[in-house]
Image 1 (cartoon, helix red, strand yellow):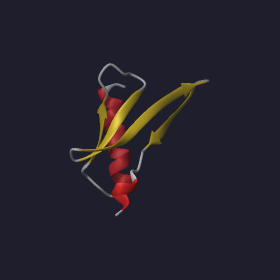
Image 2 (cartoon, helix red, strand yellow):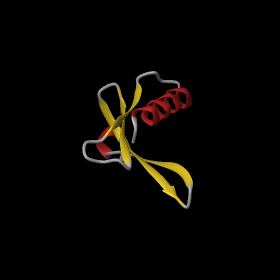
Image 3 (cartoon, one colour):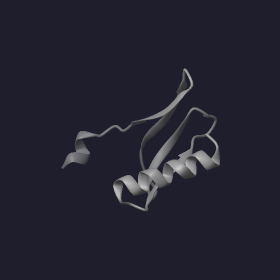
Image 4 (tube, helix red, strand yellow):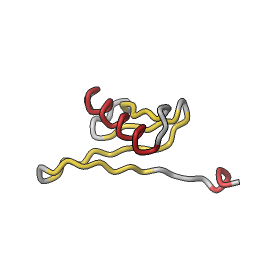
Length: 69
């Protein structure tokens, strides 16, 4: 993903979740996805889907049972 797209997605996440520490960052050697962080803590992967000319994004986040305590 290009830096302009990453910036727009970061702004979207920050506004949607009310947290300025959220950031969408490029993944090494990947152009179809990015990583989502709160500060320096990794949250999940954001996938870009440009199928049939309809651009959308899918966010995937794993939650470990030890994080629920």
